[in-house]
Length: 433
Image (cartoon, rainbow, N blue to C red; front, top):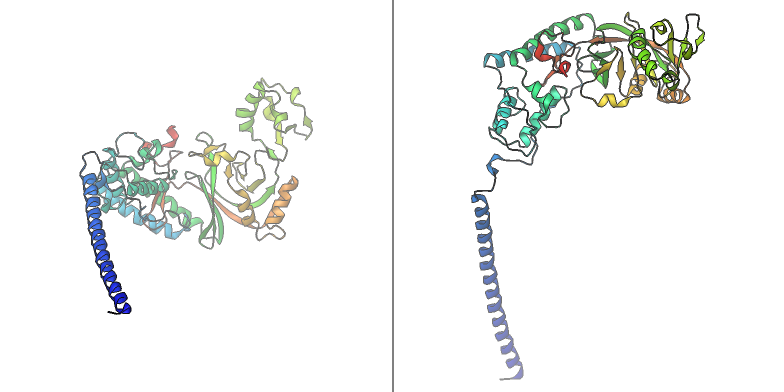
């Protein structure tokens, strides 16, 4: 055997050994893999079978289910809304005929991730009004399906959509089905009257008092929405129809007699520097300025004087006053107290309407008035100079009281009957707080 033959034979033997070794390693790895998989499955089975594993079959699903949107660009005052409310009335008549919905017991702060027997009643309640799909089933689990359903319910009732069952959510949820049906029927009558007398204009502004919301409507669509603060229960914002004819930038504020008597005089008795601190000047009937120290604040003689606050950041109307003719001496305006817009119950004014993000509304109202684009408006406000502006095209304005409506998509909206005009005590939830 030559040297070359011996080398070839050695190579063949080494190759056979390598292949046998590789096969053995592969087989061992395969066996190990099967064993590991078997062990992992057994471990999972042990976890699933454990008596203290929790209610996993209640499906705390990480996916948030899709729900019909609550927001829409359809105006509250529209013929289509009337049709949608009529549809909603039919649905609620059917709900009432089938016995309504169950009461959700207790006042526990239920929220995502909790398990409580009360959630079963909550699920049934939400299913009746279509906020929770029937396929979600009945269990104690406050899962993502219930969370999404509670948020939808809250949004439909003008509540913060945080998914937490609190005092106001319980109260709104436990209003009876017949009361909600009656509320829809009453508001249908109001909508019919509104659409018959207004709301068909190319441009208009609507202030919905119980919702404390404003819609700027153009060509049949809502182009702006604003959060509002409206009148207190004992100083109500009136229902009216008018036209916005003037926007005043950096307005003076003249206190109405009701505020002078109920608020300013008592404050001056406590703090004689109140007027000076708030840059409020006094004027007599001839227009002459009167020194505050010359007034007897222990009487009501100050009511005969004019109380006028200078323009500025602390002015009660801040940057803007929006004027429209009406017999109630009310108007719309900005405010330095922005925190009011974050409150749940925004019924804090003396009848006038405070408007959040009012400068956006200013721009929209003045867009057809030459020389008044956003830059001009902002520049004027920055100057601090009192500037009245007459609108080239006065915009129709409607202060309305609509506490129940639908703008399609199966979404029915309800608000507290804050001024108790709907005829049922259980609908005036906020007025009792």
